[in-house]
Image (tube, rainbow, N blue to C red; front, side, top):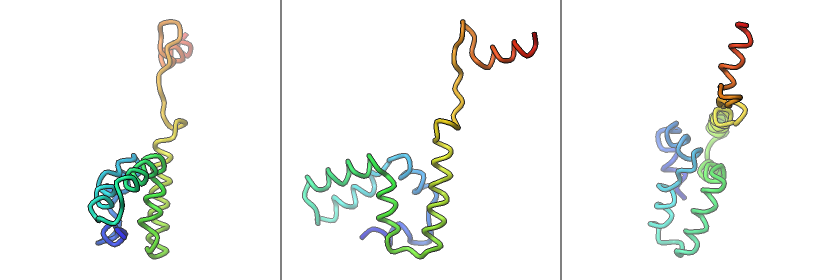
Length: 109
């Protein structure tokens, strides 16, 4: 129903990033504003898309051409890699020093 608006003029990277983050307010607002759904149905859609934002993307791409779907899936996968815990490097305190400092001091010593 709102796929044409999403696809209008090509795929918007900012929109993909917002959906990936779970920021689905605009799309939930569009569903609510359509008048086709009850408040309870809108609440379920909102909860579902927040829990699984990829399901919103899949819905928006349901009538897209194959190349657009592929581009969006590749972009989504890249966003997944960026958000992956394995990609995040957090400092861990060990004995009052961060792991970065501890490994650097071991190397220097």
